[in-house]
Image 1 (cartoon, helix red, strand yellow):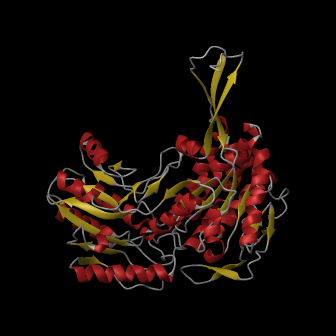
Image 2 (image 1 turned 60 degrees about the horizontal axis):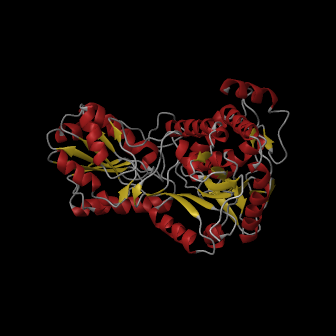
Image 3 (image 1 turned 90 degrees about the horizontal axis):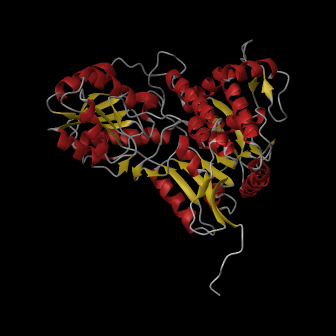
Length: 519
């Protein structure tokens, strides 16, 4: 099915570009379809149009500072149009045959595969992704879309037992209606599409608000793909506007039944509060901050643990909610681990993410860079010892490794979200578990041991939504229940769990014959 979709798309894409999907031949290889263009406004009601807020936003390359596109911003009226368009289009979409919804996802997957190089290029230029990270994100986007192809056929109701003659009890599974999606800048396309794809496949309409740092890869590029795949107009809308103009109203608007948010715990608390306190209570899925512990027990394969932990911390400059924030190492292997870990970190090349040899590119913006520098200075002042580091070059911050870290230091308790890691020494498995759980967060985690049963027991004691044995903490699949505990959020993404989140139970009883009533 996958190969067929690609072949079909490649043979017809150049002739059948739908309205609104303006293209440009610039940088297009002979084998690739013409590149998309026209990322300068909003996608509302199936039309590409200028926002009505009056201002524009510059979207820039975080490494070079180059302006990629200037976008006319949306206001509250644009947001209202988007939600009303989604609500109107969703009625017919919910009634569509499963094969119709599945076919759109099949075509979207084919387009994503055919536009592989274009997508990767946008991820590198807009989000500062290295080649490795951009490829991983493209794979994740495709994998989630591939999983969503089956979703229209996996929505099942139930016939329930009932102790009343002549009466039947049924539970139907139905789409929620319109889902509002707010996505972050770190894995912009994946973290948007993991909600957008399933929501559409399950019969919902969507309004998407991408992060201001990644409006193309987090929103407009996705809209182009689904438009080209033949998604009926109005079902997917992308609004890009100032937070003070459309931020709170995005959640407070009466149309959406569900808000899917990925971002910081601070903002997630605010959105959760709006969803509960507004005129209409809404369901939410909040995937928030993390402080992932990576625990290296005394029987671990130290070399394997060290190499895996380097990836777990420094992939995409550590700008991942699942990134290994603290490495907790048993005293018996601590020195060996620190030596191997730092030796490997020193081999990492940092700089221009367009260079395939670069492992660490730029952080997303100056605000983030200033926060990282403050954390580095704070760690030194608190008594942590820096083994690896360096001065920033533009927005590229070299990897920083701290040892002699205590778990109550700010560098250990805060989510770094940058190329900074703390290594903490502990004595024994019991202390390792206490330290691992001594955080307000509970998203991802990892443990290394040669004894898999020991690893499983330890994993089940970690207060987190996800724990990976003998692997790093950055792991997400389209079939697993992705989500966190404590201040890392509520709700689950992926597989059967996202089907449950984006649909509702509707209980219906049918009396087939007259009943006996008490009065």
